[in-house]
Length: 67
Image (cartoon, rainbow, N blue to C red):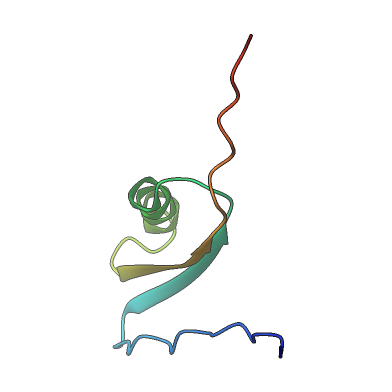
């Protein structure tokens, strides 16, 4: 069986004044992750549109059961 190659998404089309950020992250809800990135970027680029693309998130950690 051949190894699978990682598929990279095509970059989204951007217009002048748009900042495009692609993220690979450890597990975290994508909506919260994108909000945190937008919040950080708006401080340095307040008049730009900020597009956040989450390209990969690791699986959530396993639930630990205490006995």
